[in-house]
Image (tube, rainbow, N blue to C red; front, top):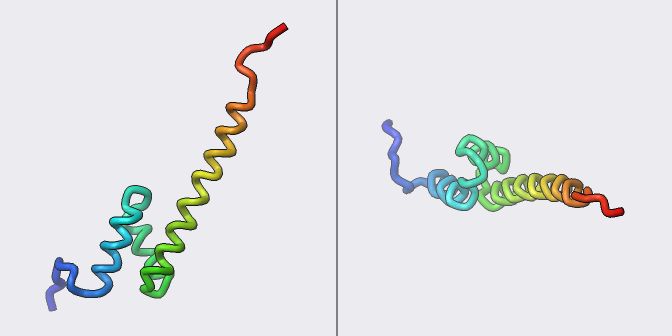
Amino acid sequence: MIASSSNSDPDSRSLQVLLDAFGSRFSLDDIASAYCQASQNVDVAGEILFAMTEKTPQCDQVEMKKETSKPSQVYE
């Protein structure tokens, strides 16, 4: 049987939805991994990927706060 490139099967549609939503942040491999980890449940996969996106900005915000809290000049 030859695999179709259309989005007619449920897994292809689900992966396309996840790719549209998270493709700017994650590779297709990451998205497919989350989808498999979620037992092919697109909603749970979306929650996994969303949780992963929340981790990075929080770390960046902490680093930015550290950098911006340093005085740039010392006044006497």
